[in-house]
Length: 403
Image (cartoon, rainbow, N blue to C red):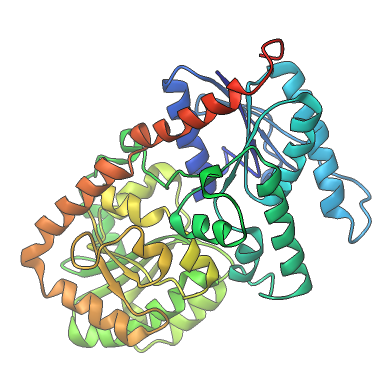
């Protein structure tokens, strides 16, 4: 079977989006399928076409002289043209488009023209992601228009995949037939990210973490991640746990304001910013952290979408503490695989983290339980089986001469 993945962006860029794509494509190759990817005009850094980590990607040329207000329409048209040329060369059996909705709209044009089945996979609703990133407002004209386009794309696609039950339930509430939707949850490639490394004594000394109770966050600094609440919780946490330190690894839009907030904190010397690190170095920083904290703010985006990072932390054998929002509740059972605390509440964060450090006697059991959950239910090597019956059903609908 030949699958063409239609993507917003891909490797060599590093993000939760590209790592999920990598995991899917790698697992499908291991299944014996022939896969390829093509990215749209939002691929950053002018990444060339070619092979990255054993995966082949084609690119779409950037637009020139696009009139204001017409960019999205031009993007869809240009991307559809590029997808069509890749289809001509690759001859896929299935088009597998991944959100945002612009990708699906471009893919729908090609699917209709070529008589190919289309699976549309939604990782987050574009309109909600814009609100979470601070570039949109819930209920605005643009928000409602994008939501309508999303619903239209879902209705016209042959099948739909979502990463969690929250997204599935929302689509069903829009009148989409439940049988049309499959859930392909976020997972971890345990072959790449499942072997924790030992803490590096030199790195511990350099960061000033000798003998510390270390809380950490590794990821992107978006407003919805709630890192301002985590920094605000640190004075109370240090008051309860005098050896507490916070280690922040990553970067993003909130970086400047978070640095300023930390500098003004009465416990500023306990808050350490590492910045972005190469992906191959991430495990070194996981090894230094006792508890990974995910204090996401409560909003539609965080209630509907499950993040990937808590699963990576569980795979690394780390304790996880997270805000009690819908996306986290699909991953974390409070008191069993992790700890949930009230969202948007620095005092609740401090109390939850202090309680974890006071309960070291149960750490080994908690870590083992969380790791087994990932191995059993969120391992990409087994998650990939969810796609096969959908692909087979879609491919069987094509006329024999097309196949």
